[in-house]
Length: 215
Ligand code: ADP
Ligand code: ADP
Ligand code: ZN
Image (cartoon, rainbow, N blue to C red; front, side):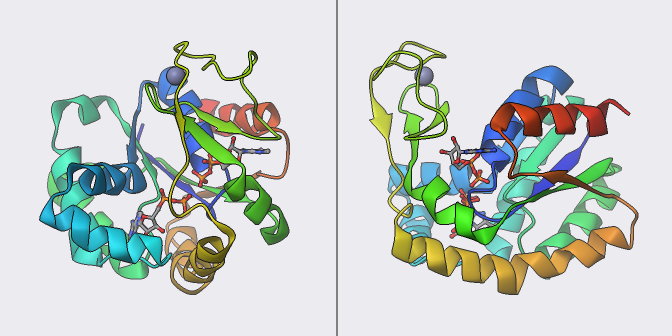
């Protein structure tokens, strides 16, 4: 199964993607994670992307399109993939259609995680991640069972993203409204869109997703 998770920054795409990966044997493809890895590596591409990401803007379409196209060609994606954070512009959505057609692949669903904007700043400014395994947490909504210890791997080091501050979040939300929200009609026209209520508890959202995808 090949699906897209759509939703504003902080909607819960990453959190849910990890759960869906296991249940449906799909690989999570997060362009945000790929870009952060490029930034951490200090490559030329990473240095270029960092400035844009820190400003809460979108990196150039060609760059993420190439990244995703190469990643989908890797053997582990043959069992199915889940796109998290891509496509984010109409140009990316069109490039994805063309790329999938060329590779003989298709999308099974596009899931929109609906959230109220007011909730997003709190979600994003409280977000942190296990430095060893990448498991996601939140200061209020998803604390580790034992303070300071990752539930998933026992790791004790956590990281926070440089762009998870209120000022950058506002720019990211603006980019979402202006550039990403307009791609919904593109997929509605293809009859692929399903919605879930992202304001529910994390487990409740997962249950809604299972219901949609089990069909
Ligand atoms: P995205 O990938 O869409 O940017 P994340 O999955 O990283 O969003 O979630 C953002 C933050 O909000 C994380 O700290 C996560 O633990 C928390 N979170 C995710 N889903 C929910 C939810 N349904 N209710 C409350 N907090 C949530
Ligand atoms: P979130 O969903 O929490 O906003 P991501 O991790 O998906 O965050 O993205 C972080 C940043 O990486 C974005 O603000 C943007 O600068 C860049 N980015 C990620 N995916 C894309 C994409 N498909 N197109 C352009 N920029 C992207
Ligand atoms: Zn961990």
